[in-house]
Image (cartoon, rainbow, N blue to C red; front, side):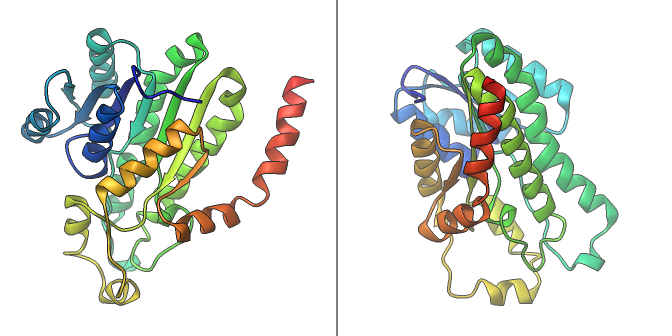
Length: 261
């Protein structure tokens, strides 16, 4: 089981929303925390909120070289990364045929490749030490497609697929992977989404209340401490994730036996 107390937890997208709430939650568990975000001013403000001892580095997760430099710099200050939380991301909703091609590219670069770049930076050290925990933020949209999210949904399915592939290859080497599926969450990013959502998307979500970011952070902490592969925030998402993964446990058991043969 992963221990957060005393661990160095690195959070991308750590200056606001789920990332900032997760940094707060890990600090309360006794972790050393580092945050990464692309906006230096927002990063400075978040660092002040979190308090002394929190390290920060400005980098755009879509820039693999800049992100690697930032993460390696944080490791020199705080020690090697024990837990990585990839909370950097965002959605650009709209009618599928109205979205320009560059929107699909931007979404994939931010949500999927931004996650991938962070993982590829910290994973070699985790493999060498034969321990570590990767926490990848997918979405409820990584389990079910949604009207108006034609550019966003595929990126979150990709994050989910990446997490399952990493689990399959690295779990027996002591590296734990968790995939998190937040529902609509009350964050600055979600409020920006609401400005461009199709009206049909708004109607579909009518009657549902976005969950607070701190509730997602609490689920992330539980998922880390319990070494869960699939992490839902509320019972509906947990049920959907369990149904989507019905073939998973027996197939993974077969793969583990063959790896050990």
